Image 1: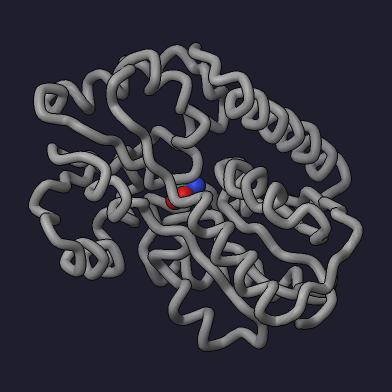
Image 2: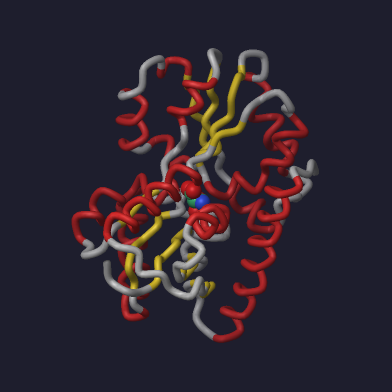
Length: 262
Ligand code: DGL
């Protein structure tokens, strides 16, 4: 395996939830976290545009020295993982909604919350069709939710948004799949609103896949460094992003550890 950074990529801060998980499994690897803040949100864009943006972002970071790509974004994975895997000279892993474990764990209805791009994407439908009992799955696109979370995961409009979205399904809902990495920041809120509903996301699965690939190809063991970058130009913008992303990184570690409700 080449020496270099593992690129953890998202449109914004959502993929930090994946990064926390991946660094736990791979504490010695060097990571770049990169958010395409200029073009966020991805979830409302056409597939071809998101593929192009993801491809461009990876190409712009290649000169820093990359060893692997972790698409910590369900929308980018849906739009481009298969194509990009064929184009790149390094391993690429991508996140997809954790529907399979949810269907295994409960007998009732599984609700998937994701972006419009992901739930309407071909990849999602291929995945669904491949799963036994997929008729128990209901997928809901959540336009505008990522933007609220970017502002503040405790934004006052998030609770009414989710209550209204899920009201028609509350009776039968048995599990919730968080099919957008941004929504993972809302775990404490989901636990307060629907305490008996188990939550599923793909972070652990994708991190394990990444760790497996790295160990198969030979661990290179860096210093455990982390660079936080965004697509906005200028030192000020990078500084602002570094502060924001560090805040969200710490916030996620805290809600994971302390199991707090908001
Ligand atoms: N966090 C991203 C995902 O997992 C996408 C959010 C967006 O840009 O719409 O899909």
